[in-house]
Length: 351
Image (cartoon, rainbow, N blue to C red):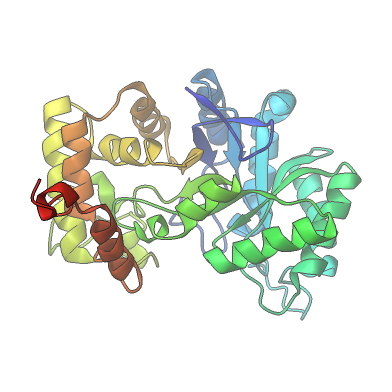
């Protein structure tokens, strides 16, 4: 298990982060998983034994139960790990007040106190905004997060699910006003969802923002359990209407290549898909989920081998989405810029 620095910080996190959306299992999260504290503790300790020191949750996962289960599962090993949680969404437990959501100072301060209690800890290592809030100015959000860092309740702050311009504006606001900057950005990225390669990944690399990847298996689709034109297997997230969209033809073309590589390597298609993301340019840590110890062990094994250049080229080619404007135009300009002239100056001069 390799350790990587989170953005420009000195914090080192494992290349695999265990996501805890399978912990708890209530208020609409039953289809993700229903792991109780005893079951979750086995997965948490198995992950730590494999070198994982990074765990990701959110206050709204299972209406706060995911945080509770993670805190209890860690127990006295809390100091050995990096805990990341999130704030933004209204809790799915019936609360419906106008200030029960968003990234206002009011909601952030109230939410972090609740998360600390549920996790059973005095501090949160990485506190992430769980999406965009167009109603609240970045100045208010970032000042509230900065105050939490100064108070010692939060050590680093991160964002998730922003566009490139939104993240750039947040970083500029932090720099202009001397506030804590986002150390990381958690984004969707997989062989079925490569749009982040156009702006978000290059931007994160340029601005030294760590990249955490969610849904590296496209909601389980890249595990290869579903056939082209068939229905999702019973019990999977996609069988109950998982929201993540994909291009079906390109994705199932990709799955065919995944299966071919997996067969030759004697690994699972899921391992191949995870390996591709782990080797992605600028990726810091890949968030994986698991419903049982067998699934976790299989996914962790993706850290033990590497793709060949030929395998990666095959996966890159079959999964590549068509470039939208202005990216296709810029690619044309780049190709023109590096094109060799048809004749040298000496040939034109008759030399």
